Image 1 (cartoon, rainbow, N blue to C red):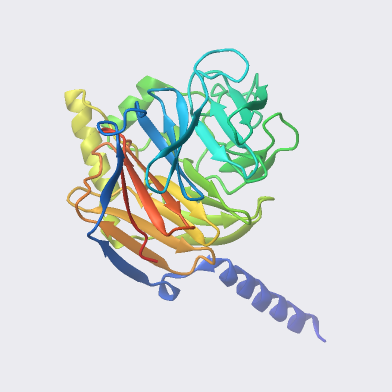
Image 2 (tube, rainbow, N blue to C red):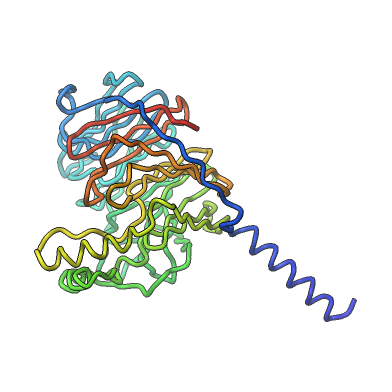
Length: 362
């Protein structure tokens, strides 16, 4: 076979491989679903055990509630009855100052305390097994941003930590107590080592996105994959647990058209009036099941609360709208959880301390 023919075959193979990992707009369709019936599942007013719920996680037959008012983790069943509460405020063994992350990991629970830079493992009765206190960020040990605020955990207990562009990546995979670090994803911009509040405020006032946030991602995982959403582009990627990219999908949600422009205009006005700014981001929350990933979208004004569902193969997008739930203006006050077991979705309105539930339409 001639050298020219071999080169031609290699080119065709390269093109086919590239197409297999990237979903084109022409191959994707949007299926819309409207939710009209939902109900209050729990509320601070009606459930005295709740203080200030700030996050939720689906559990088999119910829900875990991270309560930053009581400094507890609550587990409730599918009817909302309290099954157990555990955890306590403090600085001693098994105690924490904040609940920044919480993950049920099969036979144990893992909790992340940002203030203490501590990871605590509990058994299923809520008793401490062990804890790991870190002295530096295993991903960016030399960075001025030494302690990561947002962390995700794999079912194995390994951590997913956003890197902000360090090592040309978007996130890294590592153990809580250190060890090998695997960098994944391609950075969108340069890595900024130090947070400069004045510079960030000035950039926002011009309607621009500060460089320190340009590599921002939202992370989630299932037993066979890692999902990473680029907050400034709306690109969703799936990776293996060892960091290899499986596919890439640009969401291009029709209802989000004009979102970034609206955020820019809001921030320009906020700069003039010294008001609160908004981050340039396409998503508010993410939850995963073995079947795919659900993303609570950041929607423009006058658009309904919307969840995008992308199945594990990354081909199509289902859009679920809840017309009667009004999203928070600044985009920080909602959380979302999906129970694959009983096909129920939960929506936490943090400002009021209310958890709503509705039947998942897929």
